[in-house]
Image (tube, rainbow, N blue to C red; front, side, top):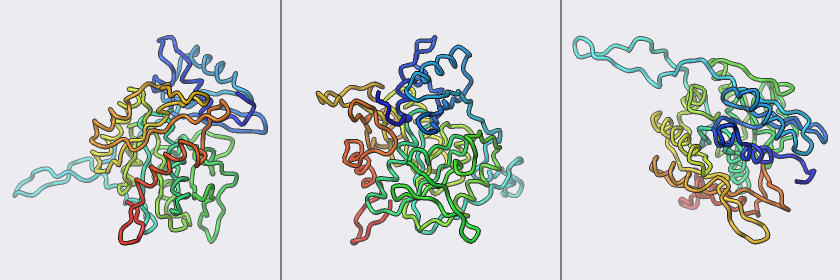
Length: 368
C-alpha cells in the first residue's frame, strides 16, 4: 500500500481480515456499523463504530491492526448510541366498540406529518440493515452517477449518528446561510446535507427520537434545495427504532437495499427489506457491493466475501439484484469513495442510475 490518502475501504479490508477469538472476522460478525476517517495533513484519525461493545482484547486487536496502516495517528472504537424511543405507530388501529363503531387503541400517539419535500422530487432511501457493507459509498456513487447523467440530484445524510457522506463525496466546504435558509454545498454536481456540518471535532451525537425528527425536518424544509429531481437518503444501518423512525419519516421514499455476498449481511438486509415492506415502502431491488475483485494483471475474478448473498436477499423479497459492484483496484491499491466513471464500477453505477430513474416517456425523462 502506498502513502496515498487513506480510504475507508483500506480500513474495511483490514477489518475483514481481522479474526476474533471465535475465528470469525470482525466485519463478518456484523458488529461494525461504520468507519469514519478524519484527515489532518498527512495524518488520519480513524473511528471504528460498532453496534455493541467489544472485549478489551478485541479493541486492542482493532487498534493494533488499523494502527499499522500508513498515516494512521489514532484509532478509536466507538459504540453507536441507540435511540430509546418506542416504535411509533404508522396509523391508529380501530378496536370494535358498541354500535358497530370503533375506538382508538389506547397508547396511540399521533405522529407529526412528514416533511415537505421539494415538489416533483423522487426520493430513494439506501438501506443495508448492517454496517460495513458500503451502504454510504453506494448512496454517494449512485447520486454522482445520476448527476453525471444530467439529473438534478441531492443526497440527504439521514444517519445523524454516523454521518459520513461529506467525507465520502469529497466536500471541502460547508453550507452557508441566505435569508435565514441553509444553502447546501455541492460536490460532483450533487447537493449535500448532513449532520457532519454542524458538529465539531467529530463529536458523538447522542439524541432521543424527537430531536432526530426535528433535525431531519430542518434538513428538508429549511434548506434552499435547487429543485432536485432525485433525492437520495442515506439511511442509518440496522433494523431498530432509529432506522424505523427514519423510514416512517419519509413514507414516499422507495428503498434500495445494499448487501455484500456474505450470507449474514444478506440476512440482515432481508430483514431491513421486510421492515420496509411492512411499512408500505416499495423496495426497488438489491445492490450487491464488494461483489468480486478483478486482478489487474490476469483479469482473474476472485470473491473475497463469497457468492450468493445478493441473490438470496433478492429472492426472499421478490425483487431483483440490480447491480453487482466490484472492489476497485488501481495500481495494486483498493480504491474507495467516488469511483472513476470510466472504471468497471463507474460503468455499473451509471447503468444502475439509468435503470432506476431514466425512462423515455413521450420524449420526456421521468424519475420512476
